[in-house]
Length: 401
Figure 1 (cartoon, rainbow, N blue to C red):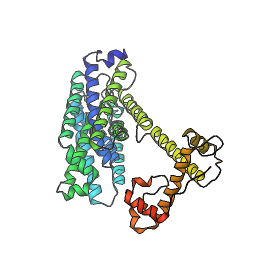
Figure 2 (tube, helix red, strand yellow):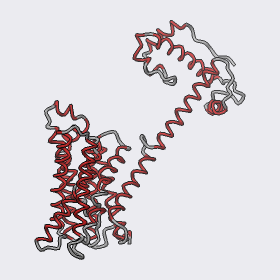
Figure 3 (cartoon, one colour):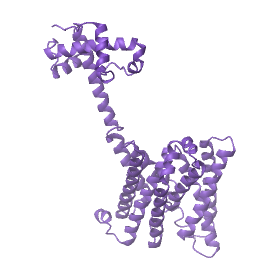
Figure 4 (cartoon, rainbow, N blue to C red):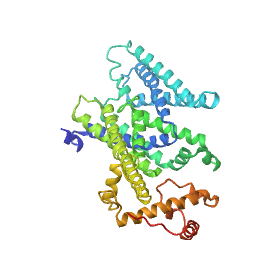
């Protein structure tokens, strides 16, 4: 069953849901990257919660017009209008009042969501069965999704992704340095609104699959995950989209293979799974990489201190230091330096004296700032500079057993 879902062999509806979820995940990951880099992750939370009153009002209007209230285009249109109003209110509060951005986000989020809950309560009195399925917009639901619904979601996700690709360069510039972008003459405020509008579009498109509460995770988690793997913005954008797309595809497939599992939460859990893997396994920013770097640093410190002890004729009492020196062929089991150990110990001691001269000389202030007790002086000074310092120190000193 799961293999059939992964290979898109569970029927047209399941296939379209998987494709729609993949496109939604990819577009959410790409769009959320700009939001994450702009340090406005919580804006997506306000926008998503602001969609609930629009869904409820659209439902009530459709019912009043004699429909069932379940027309997806009508519900998404209502959510888009409501989200746009919430976005404009939030921007007005930030620009025209003394409220900080987080306070404006909290105000819009709570007021619009509270209003939506009130409308949901009113809808419950409108007749039995009419509101059935409306709660799916909170956490997402693909059960009973029609072919036309899945097609709308797929087209919406693809269109949003296309728009992001078209204006990605100015959005990236504003996300990294809005003041520099303004100095270049870019309309920062309009680009910000366009960025928020794309987030709103992703939120509206993803309501049926992920829900207004969980869409925030699909916007932010892939971007945070991708950041573990690269420092280049274009790579982060692409990786975020791939992670979001894979999360959407795998979540939709697993949900289709087990009908009792909700699609939205499964997609978010897959996204979180990628985050956990990246947190531990990323080659530069991951936890394991940090542990390896720490162990290597600790090893260098012990070897350096051991060599300085050998150079000064001191006994080495630290078992780990002695073990490292023995493994490197720098000391015998009794702690006596080998020929290679004496040579390196002499150089380590001489480097310390060189660094003392460098740190005391204002002419070498830039080089002295790089001193950490482990760096080879040859990496910061030229050969002529080192020879000049050696003449001031005097002849080399040999280390004898």
